Image (cartoon, rainbow over all chains, first blue to last red; front, side):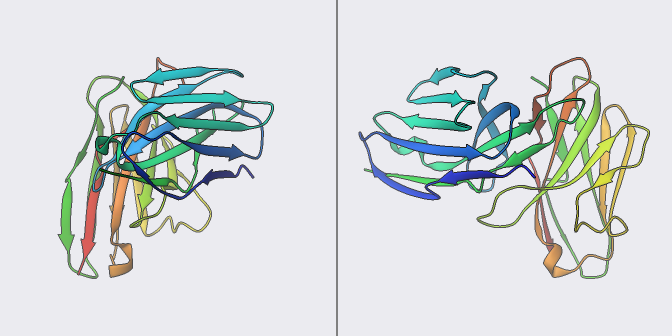
Length: 113
Length: 116
């Protein structure tokens, strides 16, 4: 059974600071996703990571994937209040036509002025 | 990416009644759709996988007689919560995989169900 662990689950940080959210998963996977969720809203896709060593950046967020370590990171640079949200990583099972996603528990990020 | 709509966005129903939630793909055909449930401050939990023209596959612990899924066309899947109880109150989110695309799931905006 594929398990996905995120940490930390809660992150309170000051504006301007840097921090990293970690996502570990238990078995080989095709791809890893990062999503953002604002209160009362659905998921917004941030990144899709497809291969070992993949790195993607959008604004103050950068995601990376190490398939050998089964680890992905979401790095936040110089945080701003607008980044406050819950961030989920999700891993997609390998093989065939199985497109199921397994989600981490999410990281609630609060950026304080 | 695909545009996914859900209707209604919010619904309040009385205990014991049934409520239907629609999930539509507005611009692409989708052979596979997924239904998730999310309780407050928790992650998304997959309820079932819906393939067009065939019976849905339910995750362990999800009652298929209570949560009826119909994927009647390549652009529409419905979730009916039958005999709803207050504990069924949750945020229901659908997603789909585009038939002609890759494996990425595109998510709907969600439906907030409150059972009184």
